[in-house]
Length: 102
Image 1: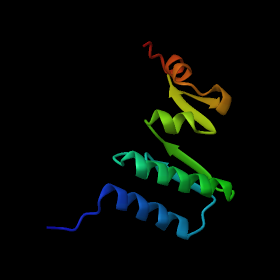
Image 2: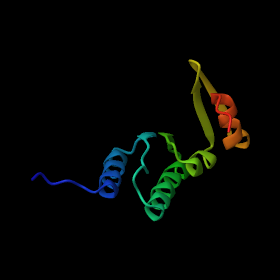
Image 3: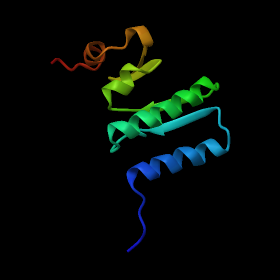
């Protein structure tokens, strides 16, 4: 049976490998998916430290907490890319932009 990393180890190793080359931008596809809250918080703190050192983080997320804590939120709706700045980001605004009425 082939060896498999847990989701947590995979995310940590992936981010660590990416940071070895000292990039200016990290592009991440839902880096905290399948992680428990404790480890999600750790990952987000590491990404914030990267930003505080001048790095840029571009990531996809379905996690409302991550979205609400973002500096900017980019949404695709009807073939258009729309930007919400930090003070404009709310779940209600996102639902309105993408046409979800709840």
